[in-house]
Image 1 (tube, rainbow, N blue to C red):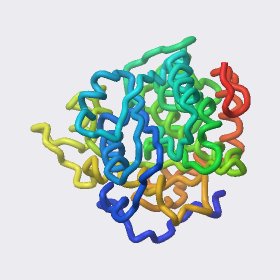
Image 2 (spheres, rainbow, N blue to C red):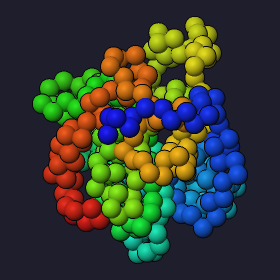
Image 3 (cartoon, rainbow, N blue to C red):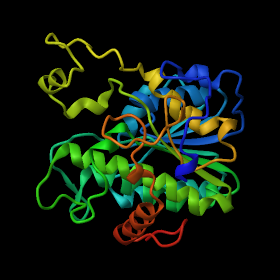
Amino acid sequence: MIDQQHPLGTGFGARTTAADILDGIDLTGKRAIVTGGHSGLGLETSKALAAAGAEVIVAARDAERAKSALHDLPAVTVAPLDLSDLASVRAFADRMLADGRHLDLLVANAGIMACPETRVGPGWEAQFATNHLGHFALTHRLWPLLRGGSRVISVSSAGHHASPMRWDDVQFERGYEKWPAYGQSKTANALFALHVDRIGRDDGIRAFSLHPGKIFTPLQRHLAQEEMVAAGWLDASGNPADPTFKTPAQGAATALWAATSSQLDVLGGLYCEDCDVASVAHDARFVGVRPYAIDPDEAERLWALSIALTGCSSPGVGS
């Protein structure tokens, strides 16, 4: 895998927008699920897919708020999904399975970042549970609808540079730190895509992970202004100060490229950024992908842990 983890020279870049990616692409007849597809990057992703002709199902914890945000998009429907609650995941998946129609695209976009210590389910750390375990269980249960040609897109982050998997304390039971917890969950997103691709390719399922870039969205809702000023994201007056930040439309572009590009037709399991395959990074400069996030042994170990925690068995089957 690591030998394929290098840029392709796509002609796109950091300032490419969602509209640029889908220009000339007709997605009529395609069905997509976008988790968190009503806010921030997810909203831009949903809008762009719908504009290209796709039928989009937005999975949202607050379905009424999602419907309000998406009311002017007739090709988009909303269904409730709380990724931190496996019963909610099961109910959402059961509705999709009862419908029985093929899914061409699953964009695992929803997530939380740097939140105060929160425990969900049987005491799981909330970022790991929401960002990874919920999407893991959802993909497992939707597997029968993904067979036969689909892409699973896992929205990771350069935040994965902040932490590999902490196998000795995955749930941060020995002391919570919000940024390493977020970093671990984003490493998990990349490892998840790697293993989905490994076991899914014979079923016609390919998977990719990605860093969308730095973008101001509701993802920062748990950060104080002082913290963002200290990071150089905002100036002392609270105005944007980092020129490398992207617009939401630019931030959605890499996920859409990974979801639709013909350049990836014979590839899979790769981590992408700036609308291309990323390079391997050997330091924590938050550029490229760290080797531990594309390690197949780490991915297999995470898969086994995720099965044990969620009660899923083989793909497409859950408790």
